[in-house]
Amino acid sequence: MKFTTDKFVGVIAQSSDINFQLPISADDYNKKEKGRWQFNTSGIIIHKLGKSWDTTKVLVFPLQLNNISYSRHEIETAVGNFLVDQGIPVLDYYSHNY
Image 1 (cartoon, rainbow, N blue to C red):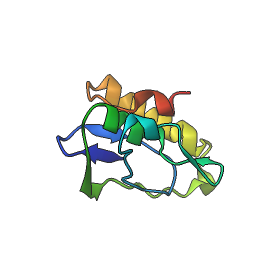
Image 2 (image 1 turned 135 degrees about the vertical axis):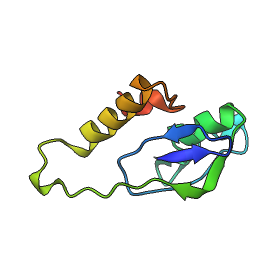
Image 3 (image 1 turned 90 degrees about the vertical axis):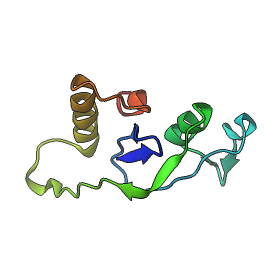
């Protein structure tokens, strides 16, 4: 989980590529680099909202999926939905629910 400097949950992600990249302008939203999007959805949302990442902390939950019958994506979705059900807004809510 990554947070904004004003303490919002910015994103819940199931990958191992923690980054704090933000576009400089809206013109950057659709830029590609080596055939891949230069900025991820959460970075674009944070930029669009005029917020910035808190680069001093992230929450990481290392999981060993050997004996778990859920996929990484299912776990990410469940954690995000749990937080939302508890009234905690997740700014990039839809990215883990597609």
